[in-house]
Length: 113
Length: 292
Image 1 (spheres, chains in turn yellow, blue):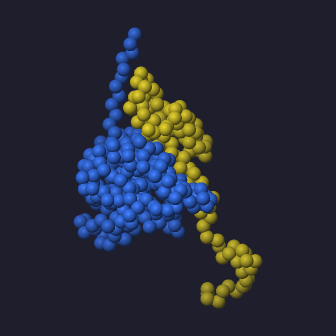
Image 2 (spheres, rainbow over the protein chains, first blue to last red; image 1 turned 60 degrees about the horizontal axis):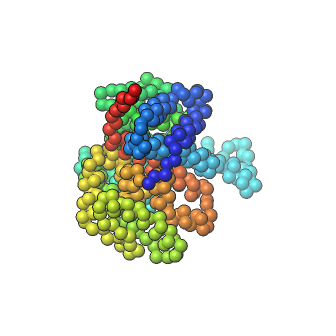
Image 3 (tube, each protein chain N blue to C red; image 1 turned 60 degrees about the vertical axis):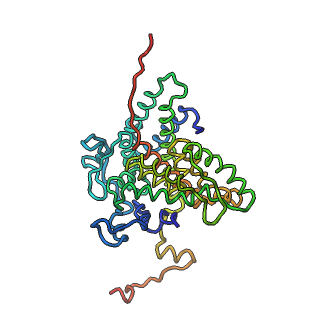
């Protein structure tokens, strides 16, 4: 009852996710252990004459779940960076929001010494 | 109320948030630090750390597969050696550690969190307590708990949730049913027994994963649908958030809240489901002889 689509599409999307993960490091994604494991698993389960091979469906479901995991983590981190990652403003910035400037006291604030 | 435990608040993300859930579980069993709040604080590492390693590799030890960060072996928060029984799980955890840049964002490493919780068991729950924790959600299961108005939402709930209930009733040979009663649906005791014995067939690690997924989706039946590969993660999350999606369609989507929560829920559910499958599978490769 699960509408997963063709396994090739899932595999391609997974490779795209792995490429995203590796894009910052500059190394080819073929070196990753995850890449090797996935390719091995997909190849191993391809050779079967059964149309309704249960193992193939299990693997495809696992791959689709892993794809969902990688994709959602990437989106979640991106959203966090964009909307929630800025942290608090400093005192100067907070004053600047309403057009004020902090006073310049050459002797330092009275209670600091 | 449960969701607020998981929000990335001012604390910058709490690494294993799950000790939050154990407020109902007995504490007196272990010799651990007294009040539960101390337990929570002492188990949670800092929210973000600088990345202190370059390479991640996997080795096979006696207890299972281990993760090495540079030359150091990865350990759990309770300083136990980090071993996993399944190679696929080890590869996935290694990929999580490998994909961190500059800072280690623990709140994105769901599989590592689940493994740590299974290895350490900080709330010290046994199998029965885990099963009981999951079964608690059945009494107010999301897809059995219906509204009476507005009409379109009632229709939507009927069309989307009824097929899943039918599937569960057929698959497990139980009686469920939905209700608009404020007390929730009336689940017969025999149904609960069937589910309890079904859950008892999973090992401890898989049960941690199942309990995690049930807590995320607030529905035992949806979690069983996921574990039995009847629903995809996206579909299960959609069904769990059905009313929210309905309101979003009506009133509009707020990216920094709705999408944020959606992706976080999807990530956690996917991690939990993957964890359960990888911990409860046993793979055997049968080579077919090529017919000449």
